Image (cartoon, rainbow, N blue to C red; front, top):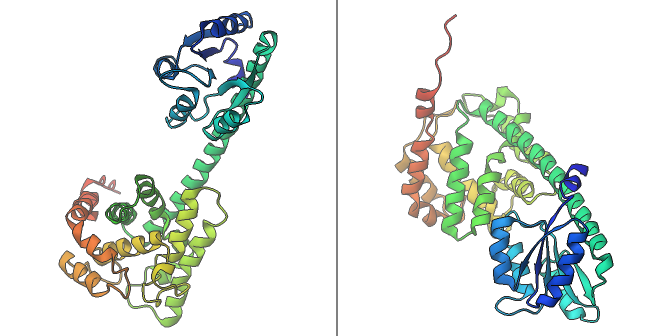
Length: 354
């Protein structure tokens, strides 16, 4: 954390105010404290400067022509990479309405008018140190989250390698899911969430014995009961995670074998009681399973598989998703060909001779 603070010995401060006589003493006070300063007369000029110079802090008046401080703050906070840029609003102490609005729009802090120029540098340094510390903590939290996610992804992939010769099932199935989500009208962020979370749907298979997971024939009733536990095992592995991604993966792992008519597992959910992400992944998972070779069966043709999905509309699958699936079938076929097991086997390096 100290490294981030040390980098700001001569921080670049952007002053935004339409009144020159307000900018001048602020500039002098900050430069005396060792800061570098750039100035803008309104939010539009400030935004142009931010894109070019990336200041370490913005100190802005509220009321300005062309673009006021509120609009500028909102624009900055909407830009990727600027989420943690300190924005300090200058306003009167008794103007609580402006202060509350500034905080809602993402302002870091505020300074009150009339400004005590002798204390301004100390105030700026304090805010910069606080922002640097918060950024360092956020980076560490993100790194821990990425590490946890990568471990869980690898567990999911390990489970697939036990159940599928190439492991490309999760790549196809997750892309089918995102495409079906797009057809359903999900937002871009939810489509990306599906793409990232769906590969973990069968992570619980890591706990299923090979004698059952790889059995070439039909499972006995007892064996199938054990196999069904992979949904609960997956849910347990992904439980109590704070991130939206892993919470979504948790729901998918638990519910991707539930059926629209309530005859699925592990909970026997029915209809819209099943989370939408689970319903989407269920259809995508079944289509890929039907069209892929498994220890217990040969692959079905695409036509046979689509007919089976149509037949199960309203029983296994959400009847609103099935026509959407058929609608995007040409795009699904592109994904299927791109990530086909055959192409993977052709591209795989030859085994060294003994």
